[in-house]
Length: 455
Image 1 (cartoon, rainbow, N blue to C red):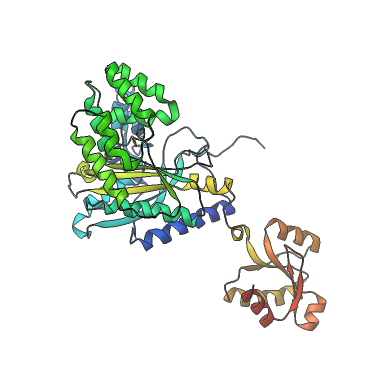
Image 2: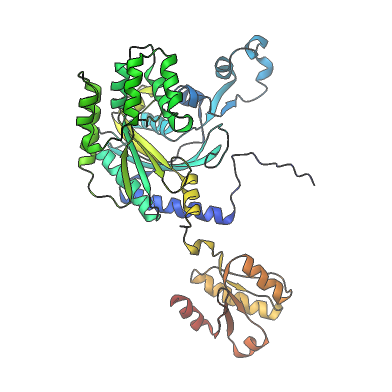
């Protein structure tokens, strides 16, 4: 048989244990989301192309999976058009796309159902998204985003609630060394206004956002190419080198930026307002990072990114404030804020730090070995009764050597095996063997149930 792989890279199959780990993390998130009053929402995997393209920035638009129109559409396309640029061609031959994230579909849903939604609206959504990215560790083409958003209020309490959600989820997962990096797009816009350049703010944010991947020199070169003055480049280099405490934001920018700047003043004021009211956190460590930009177009205020300092995997979450998200659909529902968890990257952290609970690795409570038809019939009676008490159990289907059945049980991480042979038939009891330590007990059914209840 050929060794050729028939699966797409970046779109992995998930084994039983991988599915269980995902469900474990998702259940922790769901519990916290609902404790904070968020309601569930789901949107379709496929959106109209016009909903997605143009709302993320030029770099992100290239990663959207666009779907060809149905039928033999290409045969009707003019040959000159086939040789045209990518954007022109794709707009003609594609009218649908796989969702890139959950935020823009959420905005579409809000705009469509505005009259029936009670604002402020708190929703959580845990669904797959697709990006035509280069697969690598922690970066897949198909992955699950877990979002929580609050829309319909400009109150600082939105960000406070969302930061506390982050804190509780990571605490309940047992993750330590979790860093919440923060910045404010208003501060960045204020710094951007200082530059005498034809540069666009979105381009500036996208380039700044690449510092982590490509280094500060990439960003400085970007500023030079866009004719930013040497004086302002030196100023920004100096700002990026500084370690800035949130408590000192006001005095820091007052000293560094001599002229009055309303954008910076507002960004500093908003940031301090959130963190002065935040109170104690269980596990998050907060750091202000001026290089954090969140390159997506829709952020307008406080922005977040979450990292784990013990695992080199990049961000495991991110989000921020947006003021005009629904305006792209012709609606003005007001301000909102949201956060996202990167499920696959969180799972990598938990794996590398050995934080998944051991019970996830148990696939079955009891396996009844098969020693013959008469024994199997009695075993099935026990199995039916145990299942009525919500214990997972099954009968090995074939009467083969006991050694092979025990080997199968070991490979499946079965907790106990139950043996019904000639002796057990006579005594109307079963032999229960603990597969982790080898302990054995002869029990009738009532004793068996009490044994599990008292574990």
